[in-house]
Amino acid sequence: MTDVSVVIPVRNEEKNVVELAARLQSVFAQMHASFELIFVTDSNNDNTVGMLKEIHRSDARLKILKLSNSFGHHTAVYAGLAFARGTAVVIMDGDLQDCPEDIPALYAKMNAGYDIVYGIKKKKNDSIVRNFFSKVFVKTMQFLSDYELDFNTSMFRIISRRVADAVLCFKEREPSLTFIMGFIGFPTAKVVVTSGSRQHGKTKYSYWHQINFAISSLVSFSTKPLRYVSLVGLGISALGFFYFLFALGKWACVGVPVTGWTSMMALLGLLGGAILFAQGITGEYIARVFIETKNRPRYVVEETIGFAKEQDAQLPATLPQQQ
Image 1 (tube, rainbow, N blue to C red):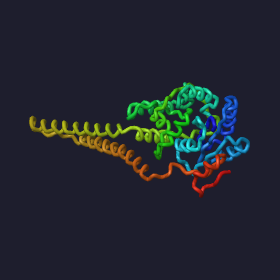
Image 2 (image 1 turned 135 degrees about the horizontal axis):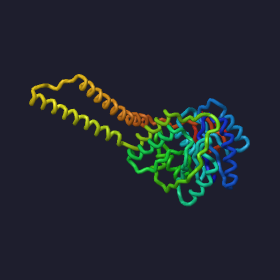
Image 3 (image 1 turned 30 degrees about the vertical axis):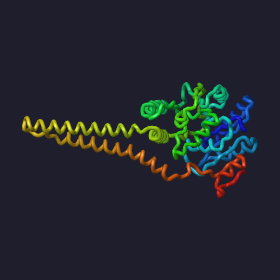
Image 4 (image 1 turned 45 degrees about the vertical axis):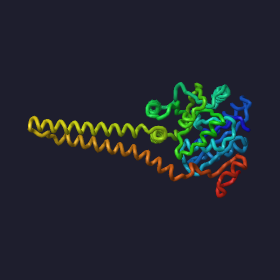
């Protein structure tokens, strides 16, 4: 069995994959460990797949898993885990912001008795806005989560075989893998790693993708928003009741009804906004239930290159076969 599998989701990274593959090959040569590099990709607008095929021709340890459509970053990693055969699995991004030279430190820490070892970057090379959003997201998840999880949004980590197998048991349509691994709860450690920088291309993880991931993670691991919305609704109802008592008391004691078109419209606007907000939160949970009940496949593999025949046998017969 292979010592280490490296799962790398990539999209439109033709100018980065060559350097990344070369650096990974150099690192594992120094580690004297057997390895496989699994690049997971989908719909590209450049020659990423062509560059990967060229590297594969010179080194069969580089393997390509091409999905038929864009199923999401975490789903791509999940697909890579399903095909990985290493006793340990490294998960990293393909934009050179995760440094391959840090893998030996992660591997050594795992061999010290940990199942999950993730990299902590002292200083991320992201914008101030992205760093702020990340911190707010982590704090929000820590406050709202129904579970005591070690929240770490970085995908760069190494996991043991039993963690990979446990992750594959989760059948969620929109998996939040970083939080699923925290939910599993096997021995976990942290290692300070280098924060690399993107040399070519632009990030594929826009602010909208970050917001969507935050909402999906929150809905997956917490029911507190529903509870808090109920409490807010109860509070607004109480305020309305006391306002009614105030109006009734003023009419009974002074004989003058409470007037004020502006205050009434403001109150109606507040109530309408609160109702729509509550419906939106409830709708997010209902939408997740709807997605899960359809029971669609999490991803569809279009092509595999470099994998064993028995792994290809797991794919639908209509899909392209091993090259």
